[in-house]
Image 1 (cartoon, rainbow, N blue to C red):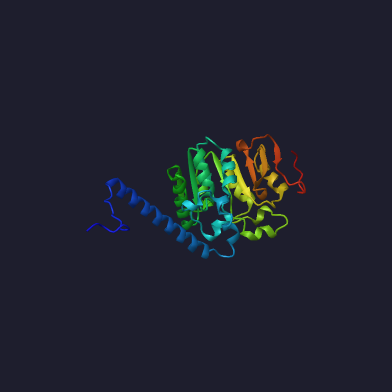
Image 2: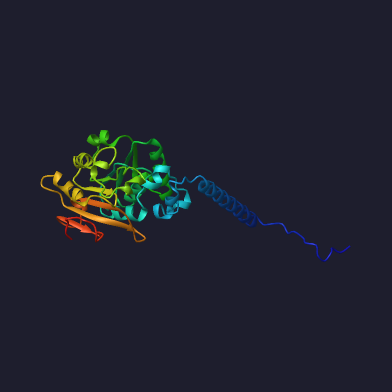
Length: 271
């Protein structure tokens, strides 16, 4: 009896076709799992970090590959574009010390252009997240991760550049009309700068956009002779995100220079 016209005869797959089929099934399963994980993550986003979650690709361009942050990390990590710009200032440096590494945003960018990075944070969970994120970017072997208090470790650290981005006090810093250095945590900005200066005069500080500019420039006078300082306002998509202070050899210009300053800022610093 001849087979029905509409019947379909399944031909045996070749070994190559079976491998290709299995690979497609694995890829689809992986994508499905990632999608479910992202949906679950979005459901768990707290009201405090929702705004920052919407900016996740500005924080980490490889976010979808598996980057992880804790709640504080969402509003304290340096946007990737700014972190990369800061890292350019010490390209080729031997050792960069990231004193408040958090979830690793800056340490990752420093590791791309410097020989070695020492990433310090007092929170072991953040250090674990920083290591995980560094693996996503493929730079974990260039970073030494240390759980500890920077102020206690500083006398034993050696480096060519120190990067300082201490806690700003959470999102509430924006409510301050003029953010002064004594508002930084866990110690005021002057004390922090002096501790870093004992390691190297080449210091980069990332601070709030409403920073008291006069106070910022005065930090250079804590050294004798005074350090060169450059003050730069940082933007992402046209929005001001923070102020970066470059001291010593990280400052591209001599004396005091302010770049990208908002016109209505009240500061006595010339171009």
